[in-house]
Length: 281
Image (cartoon, rainbow, N blue to C red):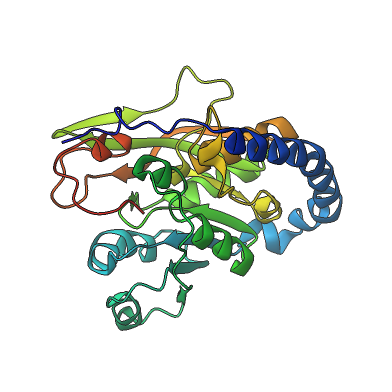
């Protein structure tokens, strides 16, 4: 089987041109938009009602994995110690039973939004993996009502106090985006992912919680064209760093990342596995 390391995307002049144009646009617009958003929202975020019990939106893009979503991802989210949440499950027009499974749960905090299937992903599979779910994530950002926004994939598992721990930590430190440690399971072993050597220290996307006005940083469907930081979350993270977002890191496991059914590892390593049989989300 040809591995993904053997079919790495080679950048064309078109890739470079689009990447350079977007980089310039983001560099010029996002710092200014962040300053304007802060001016508008900083005082509002300090209101007693917003501090004590703010609404937290959790965005979950899903890709033809209704059963896994309903049995593994959603139960610990809906059982969070922090109760004032809305959960947006964003589908992509695939014909499966995800809508019915979500509806059968019967929790009023849970909402399913089905988007038309996005057909303009890059053809090369690893590049597609870098930006899989971007339209759904951006739809989630546009639809979120919360004062804070969290992100998770449809196969990840929140710890019981995920939201409460990150929210209170963010409020105490006046951070705009906080993240924490995750526990990944690779080949039967639990691996602590704590990004201890990173500067700034920012945990995996599945551990993010940020203020709602950071939705101005939309996911970049063209990040796969870049020469570095190609994954959508790293692209968004890089732009936030450049714009001056205030980050905080909670040294605590808040998310578990188990392998999907039929796999033994997670992340990009799962793509290189011969056990991988489905297109990535």
